[in-house]
Amino acid sequence: MTSGVLDGACGFGSWGNPTEVIIMESLNHEEKKAYAKELWLKDPKAYYEWKAWCIRLDQLPDFFGTSDNPIPIDESKL
Image 1: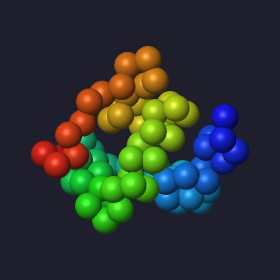
Image 2: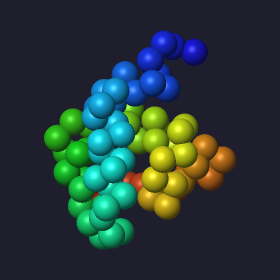
Image 3: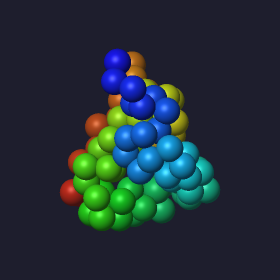
């Protein structure tokens, strides 16, 4: 396993990944969709790394799903 993958060194960073999770947790489903699209548009690479980080660590399972059952999202249609 690559160092840093699970500690948040990917995506939005060690502090940014948990911060984005906290923000998302405070939003309703429609707001989560809009916020996710905003993140995706701003930096797609960081967004996809953060999304994978969330799924691996079971963060935001109601929005992204889990490793065993990911929720497919087409970010371009959010």
